[in-house]
Length: 327
Image (cartoon, rainbow, N blue to C red):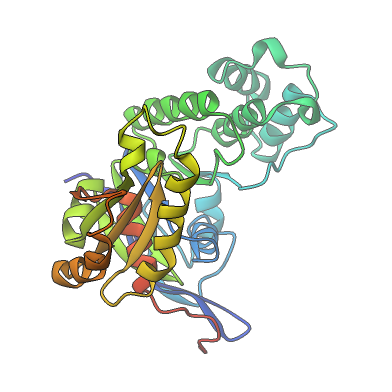
């Protein structure tokens, strides 16, 4: 087993008497890419900030890069690259000037060489004199990652780094992340994209400040024991009829969603393309909920394989809301 870059137990944070991170245990092996998933407000950003020394935990203990998260916050900061949700560099400075500024903050001894290396590594040489404020989302992302890497950190903490960028930029970014992991750099990355989650070695899913699932993507799917059925329109399967009956198809699928959400034993109902997935752990209860629809000749109902999104929607449906939970 690889050594652990992150090994914390009972990590806790409260704001105004409300628990926002609730005794989280988190372990990430060196050189691994760990996807950190959960709905907005689940405590992901707060957890990341505690790990890199920007926030002091109210409870918990453990190590980050072998350093104590309570005592050694300043030392941890110098060995971690943290990429925030929002672009945090200066719009009115060029790419090179931004990287030079970050290098000064870290007091790098060979600053110019470090900046040149960061520009080369992220393919920014040709744009080095362009103002950061004029960059597209994908190029800002590259600049932010270059700034994270300029001091050669051992751990990257990336908070929704691909939000708002195009699919090609996202793919290029993930290719870079895997290349960094192959060099032994550990990555903890929060994301809402299921295709990105599937590219991680390990996943941790939290909601309302508590860990609900952990493991590889397949381990999480298997552990959920989720039973899923797919409902689609017969008109969609018959392409010759679909254009003529598209309005009827929409009515059929939209009309069934809300009643199914309220049915006992149904944990999630979600649209996937031109089908609706209905999921629960009690197969008999879900089949009972589907029974009134089975006589509808315009619908096709069939068992389906659970995917990560099915699992995570079902997990959040079962999780208790911590709003107003006192310390």
